[in-house]
Length: 241
Image (cartoon, rainbow, N blue to C red; front, top):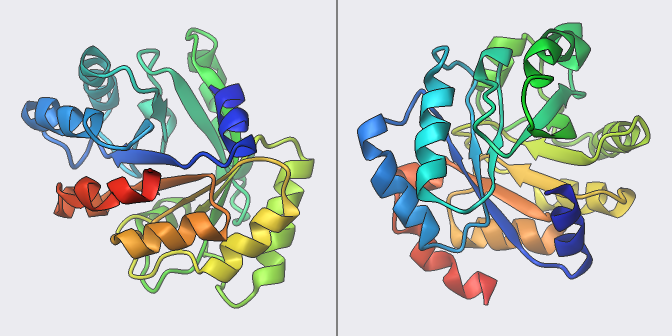
């Protein structure tokens, strides 16, 4: 999976992931949701949330895998969301914060679970950007987002993540963010990196998606846009032609 990301980055292929939150998704609706994703321009399905009932992720991923050939990647808010049914996992280290539990603590706890799976582990430097509202990530991790105006600090944090061995950098505005990650931040971070850049949070329109790609995002993640408007994909097709 990671090699495919690198190949796509090298040819500037636009990648799009739909984030499915197990806590917000009813099992009886997953067939319809997955079918819509299959018919869309999406290239990946991410599954995860800040707070999810234990075992719910396992059940949801199992159902999704029956219905799609797209890569299903865990985007876990906690170790309870790890399941062997997925294809891979974003091994997220919250490098924008200083809570050791989310820098390394949770990762150590997860090893006993991960070693029993065949998940492709994707070390990911996770950077939370100020978005105009307090997000679930802030509440759960007890960390503050990085100020939008301090672009150099954000760039340095991303580069430090790369030099520490992260294979991906994820710029996140947060679920339901009022404002997406600004194009100046995406562009500046991308210029400093040699690894793929993921951008998510607050992207609800075709123009916002286009801006993220033009600024340098290799993979964009949408969630709320799809939840609120399932016809959103139809508006995006021209962006991927």
